[in-house]
Amino acid sequence: MAVDALPDPSLRITPRRLGRNLLRSNPIIAVAVICLAAIVLMAIFAPLLSPHDPQLLAPAQRLKPASAEYPLGTDAFGRDVLSRIIYGGRISLLIGLGSAVFSVAIGLLIGLVSGFFKWVDAVMMRIMDGLMAIPGILLAIAVVSLSGASLTTVLIAITIPEVPRVARLVRSVVLSAREEPYVEAAISVGSSLPKIMWRHLVPNTIAPLIVQGTYVCASAILVEAILSFLGCGISPEIPTWGNIMAEGRAFFQIKPSLIFWPGLLLSIAILSVNLIGDAARDALDPRMKQREARP
Amino acid sequence: MLGYLIRRILAAIPVMGVVALFVFLLLRLTPGDPAAILAGDNATPEQLDRIRTSLGLNEPLYTQFITWIGKLLHGDFGVSLISNVPVITMIGNRIEPTISIALSTIILTVIVAVPLGVVAAWKHGTWVDRFVMALSVIGFSVPVFVIGYVLIQVFAIDLRWLPVQGYRSFARGFGPFFERIALPTLALSFIYIALIARMTRAAMLDVLDEDYIRTARAKGIAEHGVLLRHALRNAAVPVITVIGTGFALLISGVVVTETVFNLPGIGRLTVDAVLARDYPVIQAMILLTSGIYVAVNLLIDLSYTLLDPRIRY
Image (tube, rainbow over all chains, first blue to last red; front, side):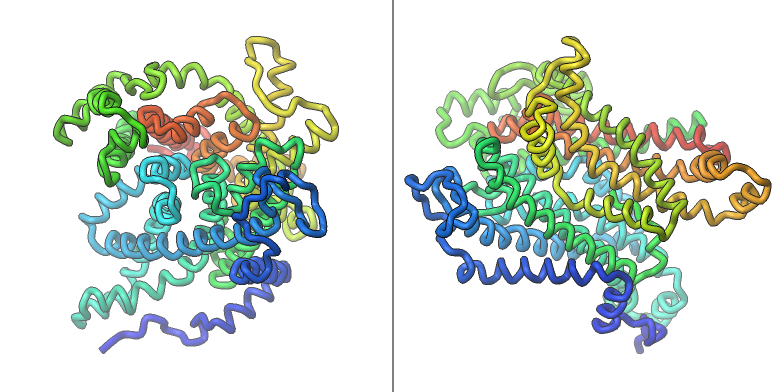
C-alpha cells in the first residue's frame, strides 16, 4: 500500500495551473515566452530560414556590409552572418537543454542518496564543496582543453560545475521531507527504499528542480558562449553565437555587428530563460519569492 | 572563537584536498596518454619524454600524487611546459591588472549595489523597485563580453573618452591607469551589481518587516536612521555572504573581461595556457582561484561576529 505523497489535490501542480499562475504573476513573462519560442523555432527550422550555407566559404565576399543578398553582411571568410546566427541558436539551445537535463538528473541522484545515507552524505558533500570552490569557467575550460572540444565534451564541461548546486538543493529538500509523517509512515509499513524515494521524496523535489533547471539552462547557454568566445569551445567553423563573436573580436573596429548581433540574440535568449525561471519560482512556490540569493 | 577558527580552517582542508585531487586526476584520467595530449599532434619523442619527466608521469599514480602534493605545499607549482618559467613567477608577473580590476569592481559594486537594494526595498512595489529588479535581471542575462563591447563602442570609439584596450601599470601614474581600468571595471561590475542589489533588497525586505523597525519609526527616528542603522546593519550578514559566494562569479568574469579589453592579467594567462595546453599553468590557476575563494569565504564567516554581535562562536 502506498501512502500518497501529495496530500491535497488542490495544491497539485498541473500544467494548466502552472501556466495560469505564470501569466498572472507577471505579464512580461508572455514576452519572454514568445521570444524564447521564436528562438527555438528559428533553431529548429534553421535550414529553411537561412539564406545561405552557414559554413560556405566565399573568399571574394570577405567582410561585406549588409546587402540584399547578405542581410547582415559577411564575416572574414565570406560566410553569411545571418545564416550563421540562425544556425548558432541550435548549439546554444542544445547545450542549455542538455546541461539542464543532465545536471538535474545527476544532481537528483546524488542529492537523494546523500539525503538518505549519512555516510554517503559526508563524503559526497565534501566533494560537492570542492567542486563548488572551483570557478565554473576555469573548470570548464580545463576539461575542454584536455579532452578536446566536441559537443559532448563541452556539454560535460558545462554540466560538471552545475551538478553540486542541484545536488545540494535536492539534499536539503530530502532532509526536510524525510521528517514528514507520511515518509515515516511509509518506512514503518515497510515500503522499499526505491519506492519511498520515487513516490514520496522525488515529487517534493520537482518544483524546485524545475526552477533550478531553468537557471542551469540560462547559465549553460552563457558558459557555452563564453567558452567559444575565448576560443576554448566547439570548433570555430561550426556556427555558434560565441564563435561568431570570437571571430568578430579581431574585426571589432571595422565591423562591430559581428559581435553585436549574436550578442543581442544571446542576451535575449538568456534573459527569456531567466525570466521564465523567475516566474516559475514565483508561481510554484510563493514562499521562495523572498529568498533570492542566486550566485 | 579560537576553537571555531581552528575548526573552520580544518574544514577548509578537505575542500582544498578535493580541488587538488580533481586537478590531479583531470589530467591523468583523461582518455589517452597525458603527455601526448599536452604535447599536441606534432610532438617528437624527446618532447614527450621531457613532459613525462617534468610531470613525473612515469611513476605510479599514488607516488605521483604524494610528490605533487608535497611540492605544492612547498609552494612549487611546477614549470610552464611552453616557456620553462616557474608558474609562480608567471602568475606574479601578471597579477597586477587582475587585482586592480577585481578590487575596483568590488568597490564600485558595493558603492552602487547596496544603495540600489536599500532604495528598492524601501520603495517596495513602486517603479523604483521594479526598475532596480529589471536592471538586475538584465545584469544577470547580458554576458559580460557583450557589455564590454557595448562600452568600448560607446565610450572609446564613438565618444573617444577612453582608450579602447590595453593596460598601464599603476606605477606609471594614476591617470593612464584609471583610464584603462574604468571600462573593464564597469563591464565586470554589471553582473555583480545585479547580484548584490537583488540580495540587499531581499535581505532588507525581510528586516523591514521586523517589530523593532516599527518601534524605531514610532520613536520618531529619522527615516535614513531607521534604514541605515536599524535595517541595513541587520541585513548585512546575508549581503556579505553573497559577496563571498559571488566571488567565483567575479573570477570567471575576470577571465572574459581581460580577453575583451586585452589586459595582460592572470585571466588572459589562463586562456593562453589552455589554448597552448600548458597544463601546469592551468592547474596552478585552478588551485589558486579555488584557494582564494575558500579563504574569502572563511574570512566572511569570521566577519559575522563583527557585523552581528548576537552571533557567537
